[in-house]
View (cartoon, rainbow, N blue to C red):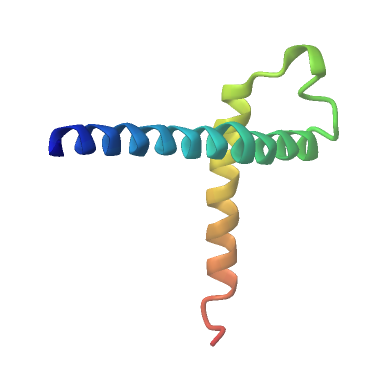
Length: 79
């Protein structure tokens, strides 16, 4: 009985982890990267016919890290 509960727990954990990662990478980081690309190219790229989701997600991650770094750098002495 314990083995069944452990197996169900692992399956539930894996499923929830997968949903969180998909939500993070494909929704949050994609749109953050998409907006960053639009901002720096003045709206010329990416066009609707040539959207690369992986590129937008990677750029979103890099942009988010840069934003968090800048926020922590400028507000490091705020108490």
